[in-house]
Length: 340
Image 1 (cartoon, rainbow, N blue to C red):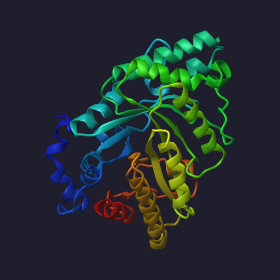
Image 2 (cartoon, helix red, strand yellow; image 1 turned 45 degrees about the horizontal axis):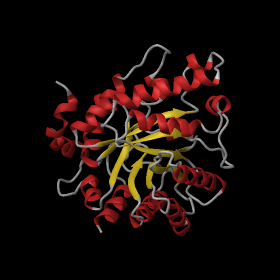
Image 3 (spheres, rainbow, N blue to C red; image 1 turned 30 degrees about the vertical axis):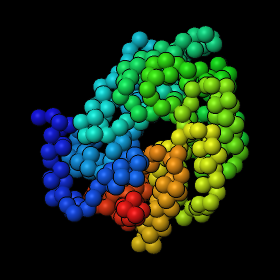
């Protein structure tokens, strides 16, 4: 039996397994009433973990495939595409009434070996980009709410990051990618996604200059994605964050929180969990106060399956459900903010 098809009929099982209260309104319902999409990055545990799939389907109304739509996964060989896992995640989302954010069409860290093992001319690489975007975005035409067209384009100075793409195609490669994405799927929102742009700094200034130029010249861009991989004791300046969001909103762009997590230095204590919860709540409040902020997505939802311990040594527990799928104080804080 296909677990993707029976999940909507087995939510009651999740209650028994996780201790979730039937009286608790899921986050997705609260967010919908506020005109917001709330979601998480997800992976193929949807097919292997019942609690994983049921919790995700119950709580979220938008899903980001964590890795399955990246270039090296969908285009592993020059003459071959692989959409099996991406199809499963998109099907899962649609079956459970969730939108999908496509992540990502072009990224400097997702270059398959067949591309790295040769020299490319400008025209050759531009054709690779066009063919890839048309194949991937075209396959899911009308099924993707928004695409992170180019991920992490900027360096810390707000300039184009050095990569195969920029060194061969120049700084205009992101502009080319946006035009190709629009051709492949005119219905999808086209987003520029980046990390470390929460504050007003050189990187966010570079982002602002670039997208303002796109808006002024009619380059297709619909929004800015703020990744927000932050520390539990980060000194969050809500006023500065709000000013930063406002300048992008003033350009007529949507704002998406795309990859939020709040990692904790081990060991975990009640005090650290309280700080984590307060930070999640503060970021969400700032987002809700900005009409252009439409999406609030976490990079995962359960500490059982998280990139944090593998990437940040000595840190973990950055998500809103613990390893046993029990709601953490961060979940309750988000629930409370959305309930107001």
